[in-house]
Amino acid sequence: MIEYLVTAFFVAQPVQPATATASTGTRATNTAAVSPKGGETEITSKRMTILRDQSTLMFKEDVRAKRDSMDLRCDELTAHYAQFGGKYTATRGECVGNVRAVDGERTAQGERADFDVPGRLLVVTGNPEAQDPAAHLKGSELRLMLGSQNFEVKDATVTFKSAPLDAKSASQNNPVVITSKRVSGTRAQAVFSGDVTVKHRTMDLRCDKLTAYYNGSREVTRADCVGNVRAVDGDRRAKGERARLNVPTGMLVVTGNPEAEDPMIHFRGTQVRMALGGKSFEGDDATVVFKTAPLKEQEQRRKDKTGGTKQP
Image (cartoon, rainbow, N blue to C red; front, side):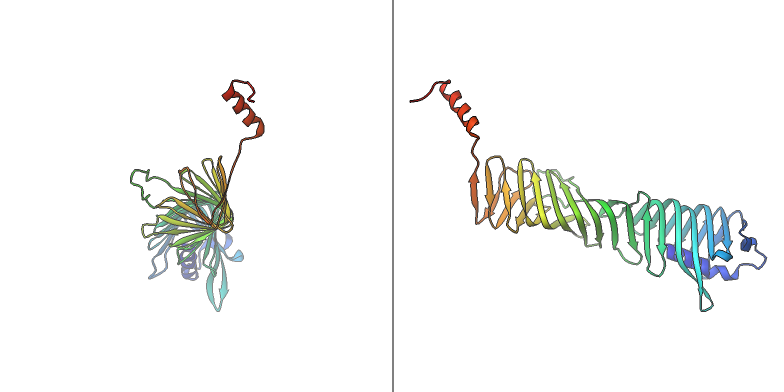
């Protein structure tokens, strides 16, 4: 979005009237509007200042930039430019205060935004949030690549819509909430890395890296975990090196030297399967160890059965 904004500056800037007061940094007009001839970009604000000696343009108060489907708003906008081959070229744009950006189906907001024009990268900070039809994102830094659907978020919390459960009687409103140090993604999938935590229905799932896949309705259908997988669902626990969660069926499959346990058994095998919200395990090549009550507890149970008398 900002690329079009700062490009508009430098298409229009060379044709500013020679008598303008902008070279001294004074107020140019009460209401500034920049729109290049034949272009579709429009920038409006209450005040505009041109600082030629610093190679910057400044817009303040109710700043708005529009081009086609893109709309950017903030309190202040500063554009930096350089001259290459006799032409003015935008190098960077900075927005400060109440940043709100809309680009097609994507929206983003925060307190600050910085745009690397050559790299086509928009970085939003200051409690940034973003949303598209598939997910709501929060983090410490939001990065959007213009011209694509890719995104990256640091210290991310992402809430996805989940695909409907196969069980007709089960509740259908079960969002998938994922947190991690970093997330990047496209319209088809998202990749999470670093301290990944997944909360879905009754389950808490943790691992080093997770890939979530969407369907055509932008709902999460599958999640694949790799590295130090640990899952907790009620009083059941499982761990291994890999796991796959089928969201519509609610089935978690753990592999890579998997182990599982509940209050009664400890289970090992080549594969552990557990249905979310269930009470049992399934597995292949199983070795099961049944837990026994501590000796003191066994003695107390024996006394309770015999009324405290010793048996011969």
